[in-house]
Image 1 (cartoon, rainbow, N blue to C red):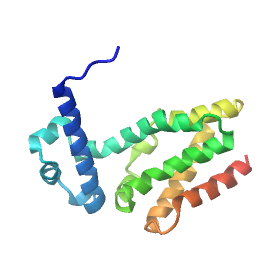
Image 2: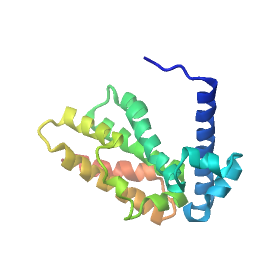
Image 3: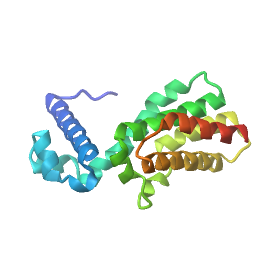
Image 4: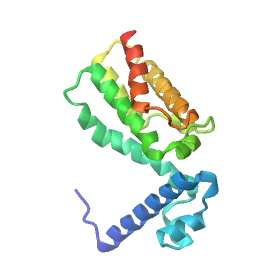
Length: 186
């Protein structure tokens, strides 16, 4: 049963979305370390207390990037995969994966791709489950987690290199090139 949203519910959603969008925009522009909650609240036109009503910290707002990416893969990417071959599904999955750092920008991605970020290893995340499902449907005799981990290792390496090089090359092209080499040697 779908809950009918009240005007108050709609306003709360709009406020949280505004804080998120403004906060992420500031983090992309100025960097994670150079933005504080007061700046985010002011730019969003809300009080600091309102910020804390929706987010526990700046890091909590930042983590919405992951939650939103997982939702995107779970809802949008899954639909795009229908009717494609195994190789096409893998390439599309990682093409979509490249959209994340591209949309976040080099500076914000630098803050994400650090050894302290254990969320890359956190499972099961929706994004990981989408990849598991692709592999399991096409290659049932393989260890799904092993192949998935290898593919994510490649993808994180490409993104890390892209960030090291300040986004100076086409990340999609490089990702496809390296994933193709890997898939051709399966």
